[in-house]
Image (cartoon, rainbow, N blue to C red):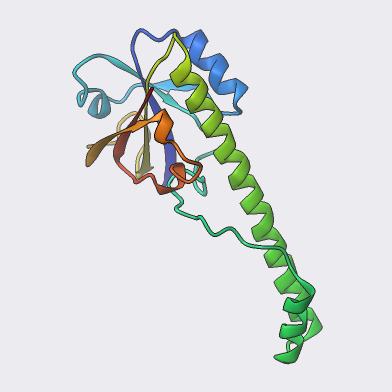
Length: 177
């Protein structure tokens, strides 16, 4: 079905605090309950889906894409002409390449949104720590049987720009001060 990125917070974090912070950083705020996820914690938690679209497929989170494409250079076009490519085929290649560059910029923007959100939330006295997981859902987010394969802590001081790209499915990442 689709990929979704969800945040896990202590139950005592006020919804108005987290909602305003998510919104500020261009992320969605959709609280939900999934008993399979909740039972994996010692204390009660709240789950928040952060998507702003239909789903999070194609997200930078977990994408493991560090080699973003470069722009079209004149020598690239000459190289294609030397290979006897038609002008139509070259134009299509340029269009595809430009689309990839636009997607790379969108991934950079999304990465910056998440980095800003995580850093601000962790430094906040009202929130302090955040869990995050990615899951490929075959059913709806309320009923899907999810079991975390692993749990990892990431200090905000260790958070690099490519950390988010390298996150794995069904691993709970706890971002801490």
